[in-house]
Amino acid sequence: MPDLPSSGLPTPQGTLTPERPLADLTWLRVGGPAMALFQPADADDLATFLKALDPAVPVFPMGVGSNLIVRDGGIDAVVIRLGRAFNGIRIGGDFVHAGAAALDSHVARKAADAGRDLTFLRTIPGAIGGAVRMNAGCYGSYVADHFVSAKAITRSGETVTLTPEDMQFGYRQSMLPEGWVLTAATFRAEQGDPEALHARMAEQLAKRDATQPTKDRTAGSTFRNPAGFSSTGQADDTHELKAWKLIDDAGLRGATLGAAQMSPKHPNFLVNTGGATATDLEALGEMVRKKVLDLHGLTLEWEVIRVGKPG
Image 1 (tube, rainbow, N blue to C red):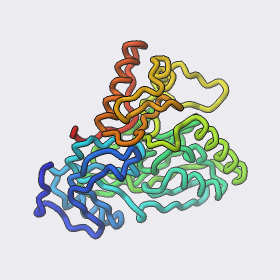
Image 2 (image 1 turned 30 degrees about the horizontal axis):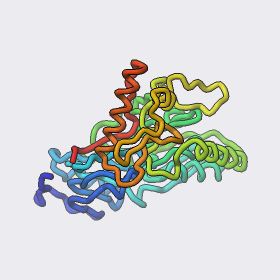
Image 3 (image 1 turned 135 degrees about the vertical axis):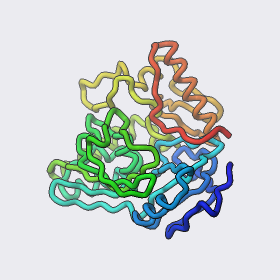
Image 4 (image 1 turned 30 degrees about the vertical axis):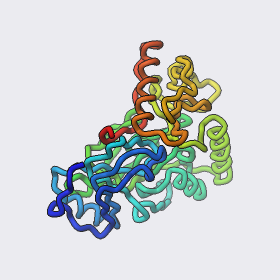
């Protein structure tokens, strides 16, 4: 890993840790170190740091690591991880304002308490920054359906407001420029009865726990659905072009490579059964992609973000 020159490193108010291992910060518990990990004290600290940082030094915004494989060789970048200063939730009228570090599930619950419907967020792992970046969704609802605006800090340290047009949301993607860090987002949420909203979320959680390996080390859905949409949860939902069905039909439910496994419970979930490396996990995913391509003629696209270099 290249040295991070002290002369090129700004001194922030927050915490800056050189060569910080990242495995313990990801849900899959794999990966090498970051060149440095920066945990800003607040938005001003982040903006000042990015403005002063040598433009040649890449940055990688990291959420709670729920949808991430960090490769075993680590990341040659300053990894930015937002903390408590970025997890506030505020509700006013039709609008829900949430910091990028606020957990999706917390935002859904707080909104429901106030009689606002963002129930689709309840079962989505991770935080709001990642949800916006990936246009997260389930049960037929997506971030894009509720998104009003977001605050971000650019790689050069400018604070900007992003509109839906700026984000250009698509299925599991947006057009956020490289190195920009989302700090907050505002959503429009329809009114609903708090008790009914909480009951719906409880039902969704029960359904998720019955069909997904929520007790295992996973990173959520591994591959995007070739169908181009998430499961709706409705009786008329079709599974023909769902990633899990293609993987299942290829006989790969429960397939293993080292300690990496495609979950027997839900074959589109990549699991670290204990001691898997990032190399094991990614190699098993690539094996699945090849077999599905050979059998179905369809290329599965990774939904899990993979970053860094091999070990």
